[in-house]
Length: 467
Image (cartoon, rainbow, N blue to C red; front, top):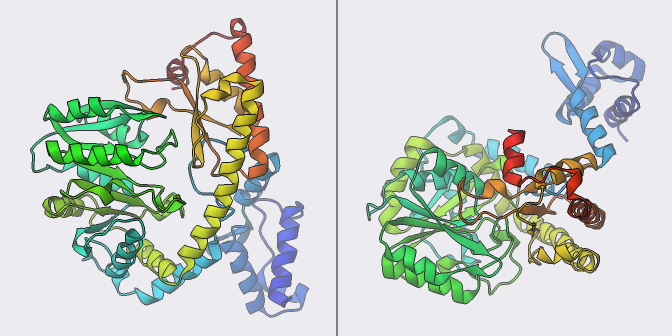
């Protein structure tokens, strides 16, 4: 171990055991150099590494101080909170050092572009990498059809605000559906119609009726690994939806946000069946890498390209060049492919365990039969209409389990609202899934058999009380 590494290790240990407390100033570089018998440059290098790792922070003209944030994270880890609510990728799987090297490489390779505008469509090398990736999931597009956006949500905001050739204004969404899109539509007072999505899919006759009315601008749909349900549409359903879009000249906005987690090569997106240029395909990198990257891709029909580009330039100017450049380096170097394989292995283990535990719990807790057995990392558990979901969530929080309902995945006055608990295990190690869901089952059972001890309120009411 080098002198610099010895110094870093020693200081980390002193912070861990409390010898150095939050806010305490570290010894001066000169004193530390004398105490450890090393050069000032070695001490500076050690302090800088501690700062990068967030053990310490720097105050200009003052020195280095122990950071409180790191100690707080250790405390949170010590209490082992289990998060069944978050849909973010598992942080412990992500190779931070690999991506950090890609960031550094990107800053060197694309340093001139970092100080200029002028790539409204996206970084050309990244566009080409994404085009090739999309071909693997049967999305064959020209480069001119591709646009990089600051996440899929930005693409949705552009599509919502921009005019379409038909002149229509009403957006059709699934219920439940993507909560941020629902919030945007309601905030902007966009005309909205809804169609129910269940484990059985979509009522295609009702869908045709809605399309036939002639007012639908686009239908936003998640064919693969629906959020929050976790279910996927069948091939027959996908083909029928595309055929209806062609027949009634309705655009489909296909949010394929978990495409990278698909393990069945034959499970194609809607786009693969589109022969009339009616599908807008959206891909996200937030759910496979990390939300802070803010990179999404949109594949647009020719009729929408110019309008989309104009509205994007008003709302976005350019998506982060640094994020795009780092992602390009990450994909080009083969790191993305290796990382995706690691994620699939880890998630596959969690999916199998989630399915096993649901089956096991159903024997003792029959209400767990209302949890969908999905092929992805999340599902929902349907609860009685008058079940106090808000109280359940608070009780689980007391047991160090973070949980959430599906309330925000419905329009404010949706006719299809149902009381459901959302279960996501992307951030839960496989060995913790069983204990967490058994606690959930126990708390639900207690509330079901002793409703008189608690006021029976809906999760909508619980949310209002909380707000």
